[in-house]
Length: 294
Image (cartoon, rainbow, N blue to C red; front, side, top):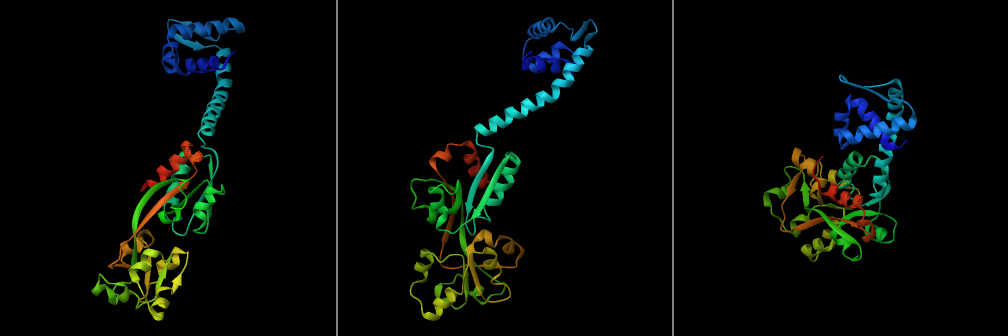
């Protein structure tokens, strides 16, 4: 007796006949009938009663079908798991994220992975900016999400652009600078500021500074986006970061974007090795990262 025989017996019982079972199995009715007849001859028992009224399982047929169903479910499950393993959809995937990439796109990746790859374990590591690319190159992490600038020094890695937004300055409603917008660096540096990162493009926009201005620029430098987000509440202080850090407060009106004469793009990239990029699962992670909603 082979596995296909069990599949045939269950199909005939469920379809209550050979014609319907043959359609389910994708074979011709004569082929199925001959296969069952040969099995009956081999076992020395009758599995089905055939009559003009239709086909009914004998007690032997019912017994085999009842015992075969859970076995077939286990076999189908095993086949799925083998397929998942061959595509890299089981096991563990280690993801490194930075100060803001744990806000976006990580939640989207986790939601879609839980739905499409329920057997996949995600190990998420929040690491320093300098380790996001280097850690992938050294094999510490399978993939990482980081800013474009952090990835440019690692040409041997696969680098996939996920999304682009801008870095903005956010203030409380009614801030004195809102009436003067767009404002330049001198106006901004009259107030204490909070940043996730003071990058070269910001320093180029500012130019030379007095000691007092430099102190305002560096009033708060942190890798905690939540501290940046709440920094302007109830004060004239200014927060600077990717737009999505302030998104819900901008929508609710708790914060307002301060228009300036500067422009700072923010690109989020996924990094992985060339070997891992050949795994379909890793390509799916990149696809999840680009989605905007479930």
